[in-house]
Length: 218
Image: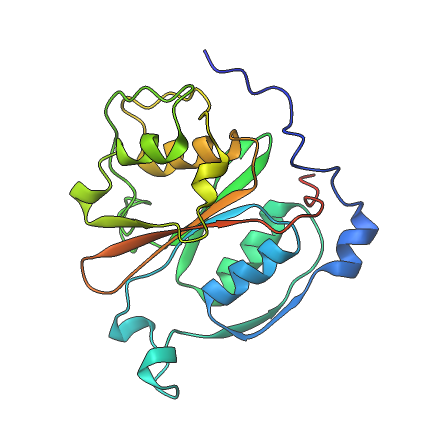
């Protein structure tokens, strides 16, 4: 069984409340992807799934290549959960959930308009039993049937190669977003992923959280 009780050394001591208050950014005329990347730059460990581009979530005042819905919000300091509540409330098109508690990782994803909270997510299928421990992370991801769900990996910086031995996580019967979240959080690196695309095709872009402290969680 995987042992995750100790915080990865890649995640430094949380900010104090005063430090967080001083450093929290204002989100101005931003898409949700812009906002996520801004929060990541401040140490928030977030994984992200972008809404499919559709007439309901575009801003017709911008060119089609830059037409995603935009919003503004002054974020107030507090627990990560409080910050994310402010963010998704200001935009209205997204929801969030916790992926792991230690290190603190969260998933921001398209909000469902039905009773099924995950109905709008393209990462809500349950995975089969996949061996993860000790395998290259890139190899493990290939075993999660992403291509069968029209999801392609984009890892041009080759961040996945920094994890030569993936952690042991439970996969069988788990939602793939949960498996991805745990694989990345417990890898010892500050790896991130953002899912986006147009039409039925999706691209899972791999990134890395900028070096620096993680925000407090309480």
